[in-house]
Image (cartoon, rainbow, N blue to C red; front, side, top):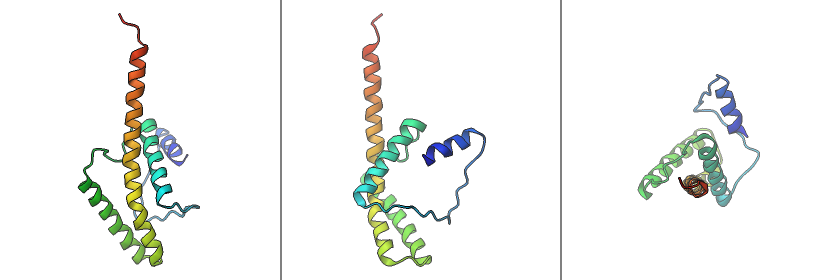
Length: 128
């Protein structure tokens, strides 16, 4: 719902601003599997409704590993600088890989769905 709201705000002529040091407190804690599923759902949603691929699903393993490593380094640095408990930092690093792999799975799933929809629509067209 927050993505839809933000999209409507932009369509109304406003713009979003990214605040690198902003902190968002969520009312939920997802484990690794839940993080994967949420990321997959989010990636499917962004591609289906906004035409945005949140990640290149053709990324090689080494590209994904580098991305995860970079995210982990930034999260660990931020956590230490802001006094987060070590166990919370470790948990965050553990789920980062699941989030990235969930994004890849979501984009791939939505692309496959789009191909099925195109194929189905072509089958319904009468031959000239």
